[in-house]
Length: 217
Image 1 (tube, rainbow, N blue to C red):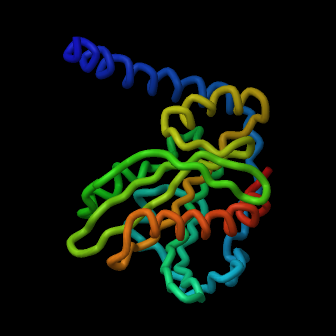
Image 2 (image 1 turned 120 degrees about the vertical axis):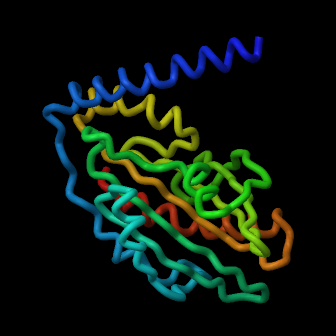
Image 3 (image 1 turned 45 degrees about the vertical axis):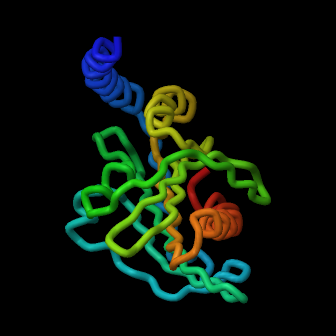
């Protein structure tokens, strides 16, 4: 039965992606392209979190991503326990031409990261509660908690498949297919996964409302 399900999935997934690609192209033929957001204006201070550095995305990586805007900044929490958080955003003006976010669960293993745990958690921000992915991974001696999700004009989405599904109804309704991959990474630094998760959630609660206001609505 499991083999049958796997074979069925191998048949259905490429078919779904092909149909989706065709529908997106057709539906978005009169697409309204929103103005790109100015992510450079993301605050350098988010409550107790202060900018440590902005790091340009490697040109080769940027070419592979095909994103229209990239943001990559590291923050340090000022407090009794200092945490380091990386805040990364890849924004796509349109998915009509096939450009779309790459799941970190695909990209990170290619960079040597090994998954230790994957699940979903809730982020209760001041504007809304969103569901995001939690990806705990190791790279040599490093261990990190990674929160990520897909942000569209209408919703925050954890599931990659749900994000692909919503492209069509959203394109019909708004004539837009813009989206963003948002990722927050916090290194455990020898502490527990739970402590690093709480630090990542704390940062995301502070960063999300501002990001939501900057992305096209």
